[in-house]
Length: 225
Image (cartoon, rainbow, N blue to C red; front, side, top):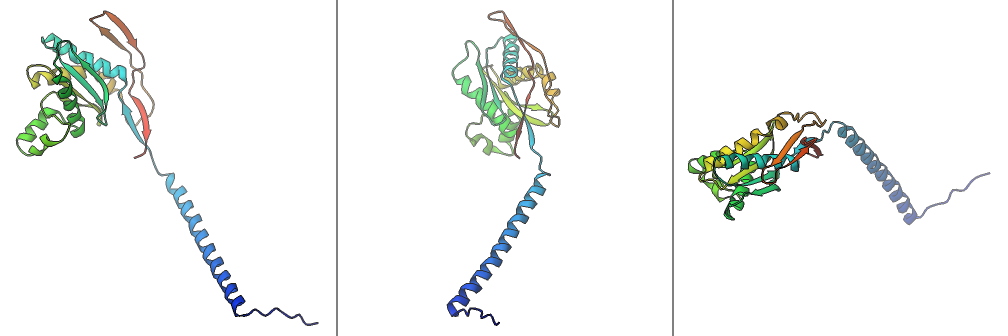
């Protein structure tokens, strides 16, 4: 018995060929997508997230109070600004008797210090000699009294001081404040995600109140590169 196969007309042949072509292209694109996904999965295993450290408020408070105490011992009231790595406020402490202008100047010194990752006294010298354009950067004050805050080689913030008769004294007070948290900063290992515990006693001489700040470690944060 003979089986008669259906005869496709020209239109049917065209649809059949088109279907075959599209099927082949679909298989090709599907294979490519699977390979791309597989490659992405393979590469993702080699990606490492950066570890960044932040300054807790209690540590910023110790820094600000120690800085103000250093200037008080010299006979001057000052305003202290502590910023994070992005130049945002963590703490602003305005000493009794300081002028309103000291608020913006202290913050701008801290902003310049963390932005350029350099003491503002050095930036002032650069502005005088090799790079005068620094003084034109909005929000930057390149007068002495601003210092970057470092944990090892990592810049984690900035401190700015304003209100003393000279920028040199402002910087000396900021340096004294940083020395008060040296044990915390030196205890941070940027390659180690485990937190470290440091006990700090914070004393407010105006109210004679003492609070025990426990676990004032620099908190580890994970973020994409």
